[in-house]
Length: 144
Image 1 (cartoon, rainbow, N blue to C red):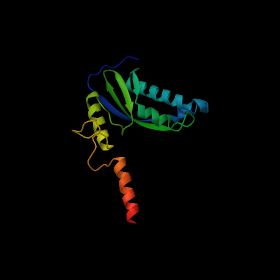
Image 2 (cartoon, rainbow, N blue to C red):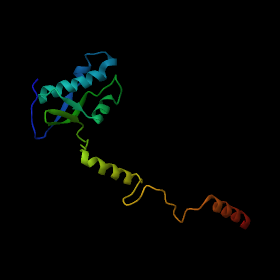
Image 3 (spheres, one colour):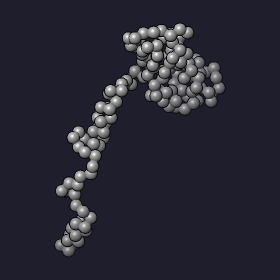
Image 4 (tube, helix red, strand yellow):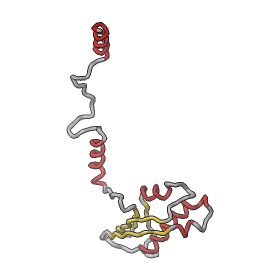
């Protein structure tokens, strides 16, 4: 098929029925056939041979294993410069510039490195050394 050259990003949402495709093959080939059915559907509807599936969409298809793929999948399809990208509707598209900021935000949420803080380990005054802990426990036993 001829590639459709567009410079502006175009987005569509499809619900792709894949059960009728994977029912035609043996159980141990159903996952692979589901992926191929999605690619065939998108090539027919988007008029392009260059089709990419996102990692989350791939994980969604293979979640239940090779023998039990989902019967239908809802995908958000975008076209940019003839390349068709399919992803789940709730999936957020990350560009190269946003990637660094997103990682820092995740580290902050997880309690990792905070803004303005260096990577080096700094002992606070409230932390005690192992020697002082031993002295404290011995004093408590003497007082009892």
